[in-house]
Length: 406
Length: 223
Image (tube, rainbow over the protein chains, first blue to last red):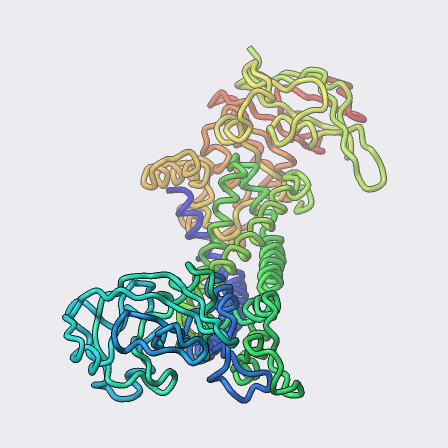
């Protein structure tokens, strides 16, 4: 009860001092709100840039002019996938398979091998590009199968009808990987794939395929036979632009070179990638630098706030030294005096901060949510400064102050 | 039985230029119901002794005891709140509190209810012969004599058994001085309090029951 009464008196009867302290608090509050508002604006801008960045790593030839019909090392793709920094976009690859039907044809490299072409995609874009009704999924199957390594496939509508397959029926196939040398057709794994749907046209990437399967299923099938997949097209998306530098570092680590158009066109394929980051870097980097600078200034701002609060509180309390000494001589404990003066500082700080926040939100449109943490830091710094000032003042000898007053 | 005793009290303090041995082996005792005058020249250690008796500081060696309990073992804040009151030469009233609020302050400090504190404060102001019109005045609006009476009323508010007065008439004219001294002596003799006053004035000292003369931090005469 005494505390509240003292607090009320302290605030109410020291009109000028209260007004000065309140003014200081409001001024510091406005300064901090503006600062925090600026940081929030930069952060918002950066977030907007990030959301719309659409960053993508595209495998290209060494001159950077082509991103299709090239050969990409699948192990590089796997390294990027496993880092979690990039997510697969479209991979497109083709290899050979045999299902023992009449559609298997002798291969030109090794006529003893009767095979067909199978396309592997990470999504059904190459099929739907032809037309929205190019693909038909059977019950229990949909486009999400392409993101998995399930043993499923889509067959050309004509083959499906001609061979009299049923939806979901399993077809036994064996993978082959066609090399470039004569007779070099190597066998991969044998698996049963369920027919999940049909298509009319395999698309422009791998035309004439007798089957389309998920890319990862193809990867699994060939890897079990110690063979490699050779995508002819691949890109990965970087969902978080913050990871851009990490992705670049990873590309270097797995020895993927950035595009250098001075290199020979026929240089090694599959070791070259481009990232569409020029616009993002041009706009986001300056913002990021500004944001980083502003954020690094927070400790300085808080220290300055604390110091100003300390000085202001100390100077204002200096004029009340006699009052404090008198209270001590009347038996008021240091803790109680500290509580009253600190409480006064806290009230003025909170009042000033509230006024400053309200003013900034109304005048400058700073969102209140952006001020949360900085304001908490500000209030803490202010109270710390005031607390130190009160503590310093309480160290003054009672007798010395009262004697000086006489 | 003594209410307050000082035994072999020594106290030294440092200024910027020198070390001052303010008290050197001071021994004295104070009884309730008596008025004591501590006299001596400036720098003799009077005010230092008073501040130690008031519990504002502790002696370097020796002992100050209230009712046989050394002040080192007391909660000195509580001691100052409940057992000892000080009246200063410069009055030292809270400038932003009215006369009545100044007197109520020690009572509020000990948790007294507002209404009771107010009634008691009024009675105390009457006891020191202040008119009712003064109670709502702030210290700046009062004369020196009135301020000192309010200070005495405030000192009485905690019902302390020991009343210390440091040159209570130093800033007052002779008529007001006489009135204040009369009040203090009455508090000792009629109410059984122990009143210890520091003074330069030999006439005032002569009115006290006992005189303690200090010189260079030592008691040179005790009557």
